[in-house]
Each structure stands twice: as C-alpha cells, then as structure tokens.
Image (cartoon, rainbow, N blue to C red; front, side, top):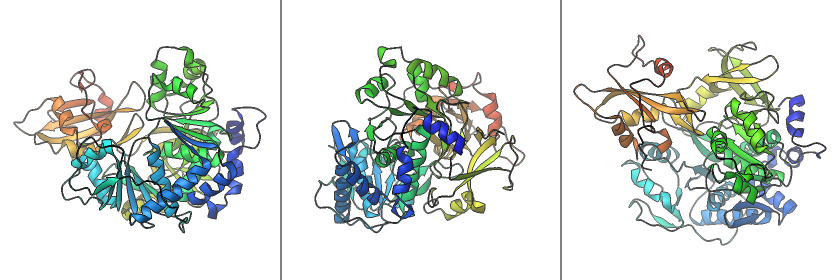
Length: 551
C-alpha cells in the first residue's frame, strides 16, 4: 500500500498500538533467511510454548512446530524423498497436511497440494504434470484415485492419513502415514527454491502448476498481515481449505507475527460465529459468497458477542460491506491477489470504497497496459501487469510449461489477464476477466476443462462454458450445448456425465440446449453473446429443478 494508505489500514484497527509485528519481522529476516526452516527455528526460540496451531483437539506450540517439521522431513528422507522431489498432498483441513508441508519445506522437497474435489481429467493432469515421488492422501479421498485415467503413472509410494473404509486403487503402494521418529537437519534451501506447486485453473488448456518459492510465502504472510492490521497475539480463524493459497498464507501470517492459527474443518454459515466466539478469534477470512451466507442466517446473540476485529473480504459484493459491519461489527477488507503474485492490493479498514481492489502495496509495481503492453492513463481500462521489487516475492513460473511461463511473464511483467482501471486517487477497480475463466464460491473454474468433459459425451457436438452472475456474488457455471444430428438428451444428463470427471463446483448449474451456437466469422463461439442473454426461458436451472450433485 502507498505510505499514507498503509498508515491508515495498519492503524485504523486500533489507536495507540505499538510497531506492528510484520514490520519487525521484515527486519528480523533478511532476504537470505526467508526460508521456512529458518523462520520455524527462530520463531520457536522467540515464542517457545506459545500456541501456534489449533486444529480440533490438536495443539502445536511454536517449539513443537519446528520439531514436527524436522521429524516429518526425516520421515520423507527415510521414504527416499530428496530435495526437489514433489510430494502430492490430498487432504482436508487437518494438522497432518501442515505436518507434511512443513517436512517438505524443511527438507527442500516440493509440496503439491491437490484440491480434494478434483476427479478424472483434472486429477490425472496434476499427476501427469507434477510427477510426484510420493502421494500423501487422506483415507476418505483415496477412492478419488480410481478416477485417474488409465496410463497415467501414479507415485511409487503412498502414505494414507486416517483409517480406510474401503480398498484402495490397486495401482497404489500404500502404507499409513509414518509416526514421528528422528529429526532431520534443515536442508540447504534457498529463498528462490520452490516450496509448493499450487495449481490454478487453465483457460485455453489444463491447469497450470504455479511454482511458489520459499520467499513468496514469507511475503504472503507480511503483505496480508499489513493489510489486515494483524498484531502479535492475534487469533487467526480460517475455515478455508489448506490446498488453496489463502489458508496456507494465514498460517504464515500466524507464524511470522506471533499469532495463533485456528484451522476449522470447513465453512459453516450456521456455526461460524459460535466457533469464532469459542476460539476467541480476532481476525477472520471470508471470500465471495461467504459473507452473504452469514448475513442470510437468522440473527442470534452470537452476532456481536465474538472478538473478531477484522475479516478479509476479497470478492465480497460492495453492497454487503455496510450491513455486515452494522450487524456483526466487523469491517471487511477488500483486496486482490493471485497465486502467481501476492496480496498486492488492499483497501482501508473499514473500506473507504467497498468493492474496489484498494491501493497498491509497497514493494509492488503495477501498470495498466493495452494489447501491446503500452501503459494506459488513469481512467482507461486495460490489462493489469505486476512485478515485485523484493526478490522472489512472486512465483517463478509454471511447472513444466515454459511457453506458458514466458507468455505470462513477458516484458518482465506478470500479466494478470484481468481488465482493471486505476482511478486518479490511486484506487484500482476490477472490471472483468480477460481470460476465459469463472470464479464460483471462491474456486476458479476452467471453462476449457469443463468443455472438454462435456464434449466427451457422444450426443454433444459442441459446447460453450461461460459465467452467469450468482445471487451470492461471483459466478455460476453455465453451459450452452449443440447436439449431434439425430441425438437427444436432457440437461440433467450433462450433470450426471460430469460427475466423477470434474470437481463438483465446476459442474454447470445452468444448461441451454440450442439448435445453433452464436459464432464469429472465423467459427469461434461468441461467449459474450451467451453471457449477455443471461438466464433465458430455455435455460435449465439445476438448483430450481432440485437436482443434487453426487460427490
């Protein structure tokens, strides 16, 4: 954030507060020390028996977290894992996820978190692209491996978390997650070494594995703490999944700033405030539709008996901010970031202009450019491009996709694919996506992947996937379908065809079966026309029809 805005967003949460923890951390960890093993070791020395993690009945102190990382790293070494090897991780919000992640980071191996909803084509691509040496999978998701396409090489070793209720894929060589034993010395890891490959939806192709260096996650913790006004001793409360950047980022916020990180299994609109009150949470994390869902709940005595001081509110509709603050007493912080970059924009607390991206963070450069990468003046919409002044504060590229890396980072700027306007007062406003992607309930949906799945149905000649507005904010997935001559199907057949092949959140809510699709002169489908037509009389609505997804 710019200096004047930085002071406002950092100090508006409370008056007379001391120098924030994040400002001290930047000094305490010079560039060469921004690796997780060094951070864990020093914070263990500084905070010792202070509680770092609360997950169900599990409690880790700062000292225990460092010891767990070293022991987990040794278990990986004993399994033959070397620095640079990939470790696929398919697990819900459990401490074992962090145990394996910390072990990888300590050793210098690379964690590959996998969205637990992925199936079929999407899951197959991740195994094919990342080529992991080890799969760590929670027992309840082991059955998902059955959906991996024949011919895709699975990891030679598998660790299972939890008790298994059913037999595993015969291709898996599975053993239980090892118990703690000896401790491994920290690996010779550098700030620019990849600590995680996080997959983000493709637009004209399959998902891209974003190579996130050790120092990028350090800066996620710093930039986010600054935006949220986090103080030492805060209790950070998240229900978001660990396989996404946000929840992993919140762990770094807690670790770096001397806070407690509370990890709930999943979001519950009816139970959110009760849980926040139980944990004495002071900072929360809400994305997109979550704030709307909380407002839709009946008013209770828990609405203002909690200690939540501020909450991240990325993607929350602007009209939600004021009623949310009035009812719950919690300001929502606008912001913008991506897996490839960082928490690069943030609003004030409370937001001085709800629904905007906010102001640019210190240490980040941004431009709005035209199709030739030439800078545009304030007030004119163009593509947002970004770069960081701090070393390795952004991702280093896409794993195994050099052409996509060069395309995205061309001319020494990361090209976001988002159309944005910068106002004269320094506010940035998101206009729309230039990429062919959809955002639903905090999940990025690749229209290309959904189209590939639907077009594999023998009755489908062509289809187009496009977003329609959701009443909860963000998008719903819509499909326009052209049938093969002489073939017929019902919209629900499309839903059933998608189940088990793509993630549940990517399955279309809306289906239109058309006699022809709108085309450009060169034969491309005019998705803009379909978007503009919206929900028409011939649009089938899965939710209105009462069709439940089979997960």
